[in-house]
Amino acid sequence: MKNKKQFRELLLKWNRKENKRTMPWKGEKDAYKVWLSEIILQQTRVEQGWNYYERFIQQYPNISALANAKDEEVFKLWEGLGYYSRCKNLLHTARTVNEKYAGNFPAEYDAILKLKGIGAYTANAIASFCFDLPYAVVDGNVLRVLSRYFGIDIPVDSTEGKHFFSRLAQECLDKKQPGEYNQSIMDFGATVCKPVPLCNHCPMKVTCTAFNSGNVAVLPVKQKSIIKKERWLSYFIFSIGHKKFVQQRTAKDIWQNLHEFYPEETTVNPEWDIKKINTWLKTYFNIEKVKSIYIIAAKKQTLTHRFIHGYFICVDLFTIPEKLQDANGYWLTDDEIKLKAFPRFIHQFTQKKAIQAQVL
Image (cartoon, rainbow, N blue to C red):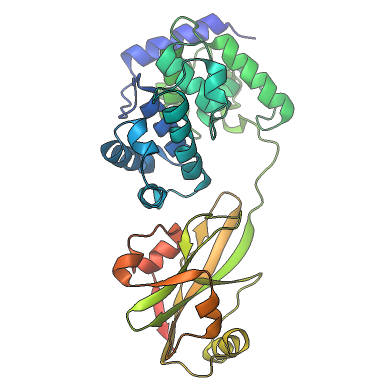
């Protein structure tokens, strides 16, 4: 295998002379800010996460402020980022650090790793960036750089690959300046050794195995591709007067703890029309007559493992049906609804964006 010391030296030289990538958390030594940025950037592009990070820092400048915040306020600030279990874990860890460590992140690796929502990657980032501990980060950018430079075709998502690349990353790490090294390799993968790489501008191409063997396009190798399932969610927006029925999702499913309108899930496109809607209302709510009904076709949302399709079906009621009187929800005005956290899929209705209404 190629010289790891040479790789490390070339990488750090590139970082000091050519790396122009800027981010508000880059070079940060405050563990709270590094942790917050890493949690926000899980499953999120830097361009999108940047604004969320700055809003969080402005509203919660330290971990104690976040720990003492109301859940609803934090979820509302998180709205649109998706993967809401991250937000739930964010609050849990903030409160743990505030209570157990007096508002200061622990400086020991094992203690960092035990905090909820923090895996090896995030723990390694915090440990190296904030406490100069010798732990290598391994994300998609790092895997791509290492796989190409050293010419390794072991699938990065296999058990063997995960162990191999973790070991290789640790062997390449600059133990004296782990934070700088980790930031350098991530930035290099994000700006030069991208999925479609800028090989002509790469200072490592002379010694890069993939470049010299013509295998750049096939590395890194992945063993399996994600099969996305399709879900159809139809939301019935029941309104009476100036209020609409809203409930909170409590099941361990997507969007747990967020709010929603009354849901109806089907395995295929329900292809709603006026007859089907009236039949559904009669069957499930014993509703014989309503003031008006109209359908809004939702824009498809893509999640990591799912495609979410659906409709918003607005039903203006004469009276509240018994089933909704007993339901675990509440009737809110539009202004009150704006204060609640909704998933992005429903947010397109609440914000009246990118939708087409078909009045029936």
